[in-house]
Image (cartoon, rainbow over all chains, first blue to last red; front, top):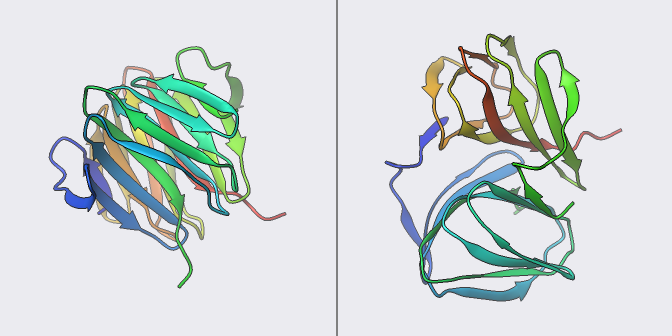
Length: 104
Length: 104
C-alpha cells in the first residue's frame, strides 16, 4: 500500500496489547502501531537502526542511558545495537515505526 | 540525537524552500523537513525504499501511477525503484521521512 490513512487503516493483532499494520519493502519495514494502556517492553536490542514518531498519546521510552516521556510529535532514533524499551501509561498510544527488513 | 522534540529541533537549509534536520545511522536516515508553500519535486527514483508521515499541512504526492493529497497523519511507502514526486500548496508542510543510509 503506497498511501496510508492511519485513521482507517485496518489493523491486525501483533503482540498482546498491540494492534498493527506493517509494510515490508526491499530494505525498510514501516509499522503503524496502536498500543494499549499499561503495556511495557522492558528492553531489547538489535543490530540495525530503528526510528519512529508518536502520533497520539504518551509513552516513556529509554534508549541506552537516556529516558524520556514522549508526546505527540516527538520522534526517536534508536541507533543499531542500543538497548531500548518503553511503557505506556493510562492511554492508548499510536505511533509510526520504521526499521530494517530482516534478511531471511 | 536519540529523542527529537520537533517543535524545538534546530533546522538547517537543505534545498531551496526546505529546512531540515537529519540523523544518519548505520542503515537508516531519518529526516525531519519543513517545506515552504508552492514547492515541487517533479519526480525522481532511487533503488531503496522511502517512507514517511505528514505531521502538519497538506501536500500532493505521486508514487508510480498513484497520486494523492496527503494531510496530517497520512503516511507513504515508496517502494524501491518507484518514481515519485510531490508539491505543496499554500501552506508549510512538516513531515518525517525515513530512507536508507547511502554507502560511500
